[in-house]
Length: 181
Image 1 (cartoon, rainbow, N blue to C red):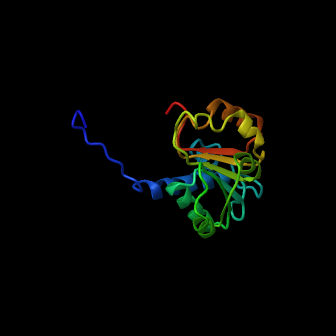
Image 2: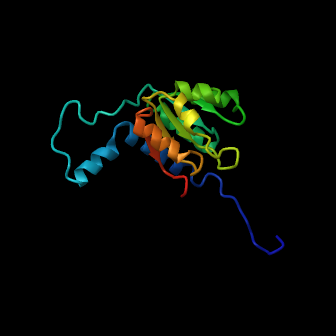
Image 3: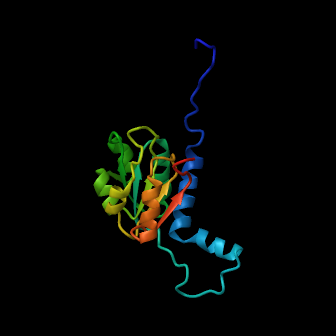
């Protein structure tokens, strides 16, 4: 105000776009679409095989969402089309009526990580969320789980994520952002 600079907020402008990208990342990582596309482009794909590039099913799986604001709720609505069971963790529990409409259940951070087949991050970046997902959190996840970060870089400790993927203690990750974006 002192410098006559107008600052505004544009809520909801990117809600649907971010929820769509999140589902794209989730499906692509689950079904190994990016690996297959890369193999075709690099001419390293040789032929079809019944067990080749299977990935994992999405339908009926458990989706854990960190951050159940506008975008988290939009992701939960999309997950309903895949009959996913939704767990969420948020600073504050959302209204029970919204929980019921989204078929979502509140969970502790630890329970969400332990029980989810897919974990989606939709939290703002702050000192409290810096490295929200690090080595300890990744160790709680199923080795068959998929992590999706479509929120902000720095929420995931990229070094810990690379190590978990390299060691096979996490199936896959879909990343829209990186720590040093």
